[in-house]
Length: 282
Image (cartoon, rainbow, N blue to C red; front, side, top):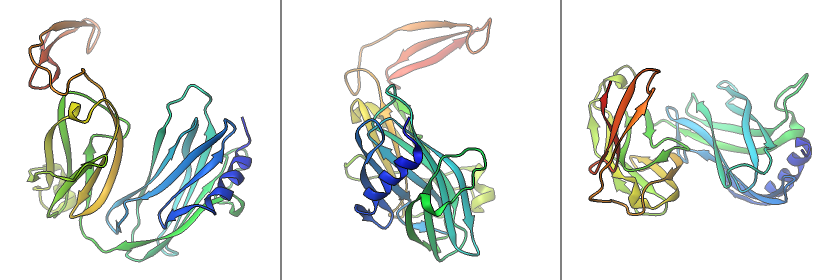
């Protein structure tokens, strides 16, 4: 395995030359397995003082991206993120996306963000200047709503007919966008009693039924927009039968020792759900 410090220098030389925006960049790196593509984004694009923030890392090689330490200093208005980027060998999914949850930036102003790539070990001290990978500023607006996009989840596998769902406090509109398709409005305002403590009321849910097969087999992305602001982007897989919606099928199976030893459930094909559903347990 190539030393991570060497990899950091290789990435830094490319990053300094190829920034694509204040919150996103891409570069060609040599990760020991040949030249590969690496991209990082800070999300959401528009950051509010109540929105969760993330760093999304995308690559075309066998790399593992993990957080070491995340430090938010509200007084100094700084965010420091230490990442460990290492090789994982040849048996790995490519391309791959890693989403690193950062947290809420707690005041309305401009935050200085620094991303470091460091290898933890004995005597490890994070945020060494020699390991600085990415340095930029994020403006934090005073938007008052909180929100959370629940499904589909990052890295999940979707099939059949399922739900797009989440919640947002005091939103006016919710939209989603699959891949590069036009945005689709999502009904908003359903009861979510679990958000009462956060939002002060419970009419904050949004959701819609969606046939995942209509997207086609393979990897897809879904962006969620609250009042026109992108709050989340997830990557997921669609798996299923050859047609987006199949008719005329039937079938049933017993699953012994599920959900526990000595128990059995029976599943049957449901055309409406385009999936197998549990119909009995004994």
